[in-house]
Amino acid sequence: MALRRGFKAEAERSALELRERLNLHKDAPVEIGTVAELLGATVVDASELVDRRRLEEIESIQSFAFSACTFEIDGRHFIVVNPLRSPERQVSDVAHELAHLALGHELSEIRELDGVPFRTCDARQEEEATYLGATILLPRPLLLLEARKEATPETIAREFGVTRELASFRFNTTGVARQVERERQQGR
Ligand SMILES: [Zn+2]
Image (cartoon, rainbow, N blue to C red):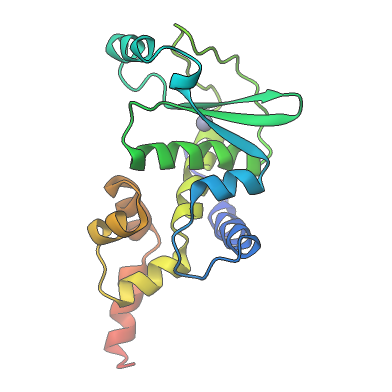
């Protein structure tokens, strides 16, 4: 499914706006917990709510069935993350959930933690949340500065504490490497 026209540019703008509100420098890593605070959400480790062994059981029934989900209780959002994921993956998962909030997506699906692996249903909203989440973590201006320093998706992943998958996705789809290449050819 394709993102609607203009969505990518909007995602870049919202990511920059969030970073400005957090007083982050263009090339500073964003701490996802501070974005959560800014958006009025609390991040909760699922093992605080459910026995860790239960999480491992769910995982063994269907791996990656549960990564993160958001609940609203008394007007406050709680993002529950799966501690079985790598720290980098948890960062993507929280960013994805925060992007749903930033985009004003309804928490329409019934999500149950204990026992039921849940799937979200609106493919377009899922794609938007994934895209914006990744953009918040690695906005294009930051990637451009990194690319000028000859960074690679691997070094970016390490430096910014995100998965290599996310770093490659952002690095490749934003076209920063091509831009730097052009800049070099123009001899700047
Ligand atoms: Zn989602």
